[in-house]
Each structure stands twice: as C-alpha cells, then as structure tokens.
Length: 557
Image 1 (cartoon, rainbow, N blue to C red):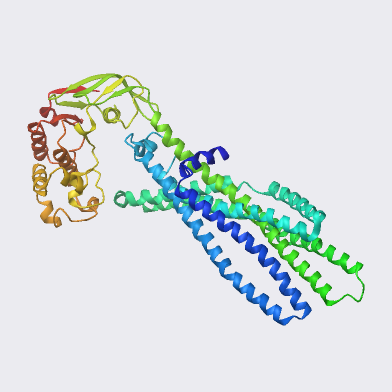
Image 2: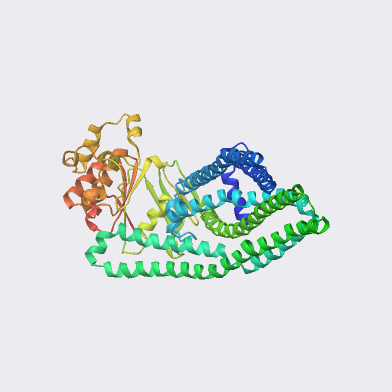
C-alpha cells in the first residue's frame, strides 16, 4: 500500500512549490490553531466552574463572555478546515485526472488499447471518474482525520502530565496501546472490501452503459428481459457484497464504541479522580471554599483535556479504518496508472513514419488474445497504387489495418507508414462526436482549427456534394445545427459523413475498412472515382468483388 501511495503522491505533489502543498500547509496551520483553542477552552471551563463553586458571579459572567469570544475564532477555524479539505480534494482530483487523461488520450491510442488488448483494467470510465474522486476525497481527509488526532494526542498528553502526573498519563497511554492492539486485531479487511465494492459498482455501471449504447439493437431483438436479468444479477452481487460488509461492521462498530466511548472515558474519570480524592483525604474538614474551587477547577480542566485526548484516540482508531479503505482505492488508482504506463512499452517490432508509402516487412498479425492470424506478412504499397485486401471472414483483413494504424502492437518485423497527417483510416462504423453538423465533417479538427487553415463552409458544402449529402445542411438547419447525430442520420448517411472527412482532410493515403457497406452501389462508385481523381491512394479492406474494378492490385489473405 505504501509503495503504491508513494507512486501516486509523486503525481499529485510534484514539487514543494505547488498549490497542493500550499493548501496542506494552510490546513496544518488551522489544525494547530484548533488544538491550541481546545487547550484554552479546557482551561477556561475549569475557571468558569471554579467561579461558580466559589459564588463569584462577576468572574463567572466574565468567563462566559470569554467563552463566547473564543467561539468566534473556533468556528472560523473549523469552517476553514472543512473548506481547505474540500479544496485539497478537488486539487488532488484535478491534477490526478489531468495526468490520467494525458496517458489515456495519448497518441499511442491507450484509450483503445486499454480495453481492446485485454488489460487488467475493466471499465476504465469507473476508474477515471469515481475511483479517482473517492481516492482524492479520502486522501484529503486523512490530514484531518489522522494528523489532527496525532497532534492532539501529543499536546493533550503534555497537558495531562501537568494535571494528573506522569503515572496517570503513562497508565492512560498503556491502556490506549492495549485497546488499540485489540481493535487492530479485530478490524476486518476494509481495504479489500472497498476495492471489491468499487469493482462491482463499475460492473453495474457498465451494464447500464451497454444497454444505453445498444438500445436500438436490444429493442429489435426484444431482449429487454435478458438485459433485465443481467442487470438484476449485477445489482444482486453489489447488494450482497454491501450487506456482507454491513454485517461485518456491526460487531466491529460495537467493539469500537465500547472501547472508545465508554472504556476510555471510564478509565479517564478514574485517572482524574484519584488525585482529587487524595487531596481531599489530606486536607482538613475545615477547608475553605477556595480550596474546593481550586480542586474543582483542576478536575474540570483535566476532565476536559482527557475527553479531548480520548476523542483524539478515538479519531485515530477510526482513521485506521479510513486508511484501510484508502488502501483499496489506492490499489485501483495505481492499477490504472500501471496499465496506462505499460501500454507505452507494448510490442517489439519497429515502426517508422514519414515514409511516402506503406510497407510491412515480415510482420506477424497477432490478435490481442495471442491468436496468430497471419504468420508473416510482407507488403509494399507505393503512392498511386490502389490495393484491395480481400479474404473470407475471420482471416485477419481488419487486423492488418489495426496493426498498420498502431491499434495493435507490432510484435515483430517492421512497419513503415506515412506521417499521421498523410494517412486516414476510415472504419466501417462511423463515430459521430457531440457538436454541430460542421464538427461531424471536419472531425477531429475543431471549428477554430478549420478557420485557422482558411477553410470555409462553402468548401464543406462541396465536400458533402462529393458524397451526395449536400441536402443535409438545409434539412438540418445549417452547419451550426447541434443534434444527437447518431440518432438523426441513417446508416448510409453516417458512412458518407465518414467518407466526407476523407475529402476534407485529403490525405495522400486512405485505408477504407468496409466503410461503404450501407452505401448504394452507384454512389459508392462515384465516391471511389472522385477519391482517385484527387490523388488519394486507396487501400480497401472488403470481401465484395464489386470493388475490384476501382483498384490496381489485390492482396488476398
């Protein structure tokens, strides 16, 4: 746990002169201030009771006024501690999430490979959103829940030595150690429980996300009953785990309350009372009210300090449970980071870019599960040579595309390909991002990038005309219209939007993976001829013989 936590801390606390360290320093300052105020309040309580026993009304009222005066900085201090804790949690989450985003959305395609290559991380969205948030909240709370009680324990022990002597303080400390060892031995593995809970929450969320993403397909099959059974099963596993944790917590909480709230308090009363009774036994029966007031003041002050000390000890015991839960969240965050870093070192083959062509030299095509699809492929595509890759289903046609584009690692041999800006990969299923109709055509460019390149909406209209979609802007309300395009466009329109991006970016090479299966044959032919006239070298992956005539060479797998 400590090794994993140390690795994450190096990310969220990169240097001493950082915002997070400044917030922690301010929080520590307010924690010290709150401890000092607790000592002042304990002494003031004793004085107020002393004045009450002596019947000193004016001093009693003055003490009450002082007590109310202390309430102003005390309430401000408590509020600032909670505010800084929340601010620190947000700072931790922001820095850690940005770091993960840099790895996850890196140009090594981690966002794809993390799931496609069967890594250790299932449901990465759960890790990035929920687990990082929980980890940040737990870690930020640790300074208050563990650091503050530790500081209180030191300061209040010093005060207690002055009040009840060294023997009483040593006795209290021995009792704390003994009961803490008992509680530690009886504490369940809350860290593993927290990690299991987060994993089950992620699975439950993933089931719902799958239903949302595939709602139309499920509806066609009338598969709602099957999906409901799977969702109920996922929920049942989550509830069963939560109930199991709750049952294990019952006995642990009972033992904690018995030790922290009652055993420690009773022992504390005994420690405070022994000096009090010894003083009474040694004094005469004619003791003045002044002596009685002094004894009462010391007893109340020591009692208040002891209550604070017991509270500090109790919070330290509760903090141990929080540390164990933090360990569970740390394990999940660390596993995500480890998987993302491991993706940077996949594959042992060589990859070269900025080549005016496509060359694969002795490259085996291997699926993520280790299945060998093509033993050793050597293939050379020169500019202006239009190739078609054909073969039966499952032979590895699309796998060649994935290796060429970098989605799958190059396990051996060498891959040479153009600069990423000079080659476009068009998959069968079109991705339609959130945004305007314009954003669908220019993806992954933004509108600002389009304007910086000097491109205009008139050019986009020409692009749409080339794929027979010129009717879309008038029909949908212009290029600036915002809609859920995956629900608005038909299957053929989605594929033609995909091809419109080819004509917008106009690369030297284009790899087309069954991307015209929903396009009519006449429009398909016009699109292929237009791409060739524009000088785009085409590599088409398909099993349809009707496309042979648009290509010069055939690679059959």
